[in-house]
Image 1 (cartoon, rainbow, N blue to C red):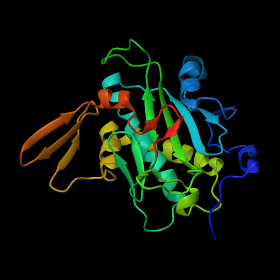
Image 2 (cartoon, rainbow, N blue to C red; image 1 turned 90 degrees about the horizontal axis):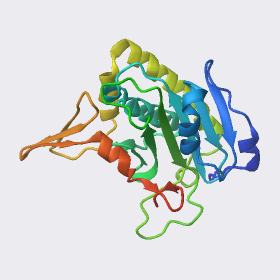
Image 3 (cartoon, helix red, strand yellow; image 1 turned 180 degrees about the vertical axis):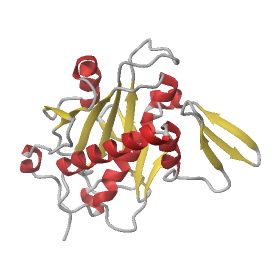
Image 4 (spheres, rainbow, N blue to C red; image 1 turned 120 degrees about the vertical axis):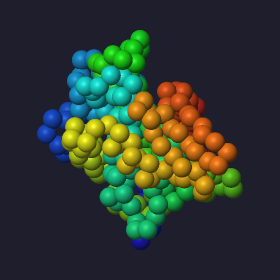
Length: 247
C-alpha cells in the first residue's frame, strides 16, 4: 500500500499525553518553537506547543532543568534521542535513523527533520536556567516528486503508512519522559553517549561529547573540538524561508 499524506481528520484528534504534560495547540501558520519560548516562563515544565501543519510535524516542549546551563544544555541530546525513538516506533524495518551533529535527523541517509534548543537570554553558563525549550520538526511529506540533487525525504514517501502527527507527538512525549528518568538516575552524559550511538559517523574518526556538550572528533591527524553553542545557533538543517527542513 502506498503511503499518503496526513488527512485533515488526523490533525483534529487530540494527543493523549503522559501525566504531567500539558498541550497548547495553534494553527498551521504558528511557530511552535517561538511560541514555546515566549510562554516558557509561565507555562512550566512539560508544556508542549503543537502547530497543526499538514506537511510538517512541528512541536516544542518546555523543560525546567536542575543543572547549570553548561550541563543542562545536554538536554538537547536527550530530546533528540526521544525524537529519533519516536520515529523508530513507526519506521519500516532495517532503515537507519541517524543524527548529523548536533541537531539534524536523517532517515535512510536523507534529511527528514531536526531539533532546536533555546534558553533564557543572559543566563550564565554556571547559572541554572529557568527553562529550556526544545523544538522539533519532522517532514510529513515533501509535497513534490523527488528531484535531482534533493537530499531531503518525507515520511509519506518513505513508507510510514497510517502514521500522523498525533502518533509521533504521543510517542515523543513517552520517550522524553523515559529519557528524563534515565537522566535523573544516570546523569546527563548518559544521554549524550546514547546520542553518539546514532551519530552518522566518519570512518577513522572517534567521537566523544564533553561535559558542556561540545563534540570532540579524534583522527590520526589530531583532535578537533566543535562548539555545541555555536552549532545550535546555526540550525543548519532548517530552511528559514520555507519554515521546514531543507530539501
